Amino acid sequence: MLQDKVILVTGGAMGLGEAIVHRIARAGAKVAIVDANREAADQLAARVAGSRAYAADVALRGDMDRVCAAIVQDFGHLDGAVNNAGVGGQRAPLTDCTSDNWDRTIAVNLTGVFYSMKAELPHLLARGAGSIVNMASMAGVLAEEALPAYIASKHGVVGLTKSCALDYGPQGVVCNAVCPSFVKTPMTLAGITDPAIWDFIAAQHPLRRLVTAEEVAETVAFLLSATGINGTTHLVDGGISVR
Image 1: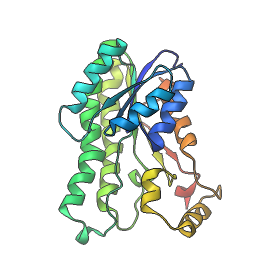
Image 2 (image 1 turned 180 degrees about the vertical axis):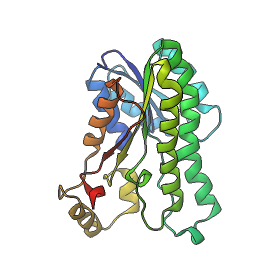
Image 3 (image 1 turned 90 degrees about the vertical axis):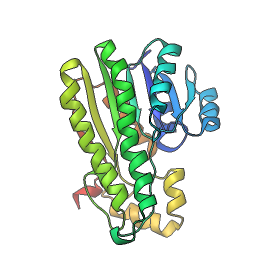
Image 4 (image 1 turned 30 degrees about the vertical axis):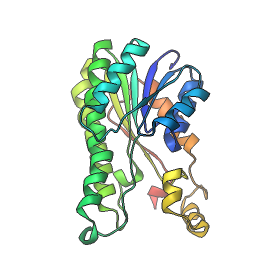
């Protein structure tokens, strides 16, 4: 159901975003790859037929307005969006969480989703239909020690998703959140460098392995085409959250 649909993916140049770009392109979507790293976005667009690259910092007010306007000018319209751009923030308990860490993490992970949705929705509403998938995290429904900014930001994404679903479902636009557990991406590998820690994390999953970026992308692709699902939060966590 994604054939010839125009879908934008923020943070689309690498990691989960890159896996999502490949998956929805295989389903026939025309993909707008949006990333702060324009060079990486250009390189990926060169490998994915029918895609285009755009540069944006989702935390900057107005950046996504400009990009969405450019996407509609290039492709003719917009059918859906995956708001995937995010940062991990620094690990520290709340009393040691710096203001800079808090501000940057909230700015990208939560305010960036707000700015993105605010820019995307008018174009989807003009079509009378559309699908938004917001990338939250297992930390959007659970908690983990020493990550107050990240956990607050991802809980906020879940709440923002539900708000959007209520406000715009009657107008044909659905909005859902995906909550992965630990996935090996450039961002997470930079934060966890010890292979023994990854082995320990994998062992905590009932699957006895980590979830892959491709498995997360599969869920995103499903939600983009599932027009009857709205306001939901989908854990792609290998069952680790049942512990």
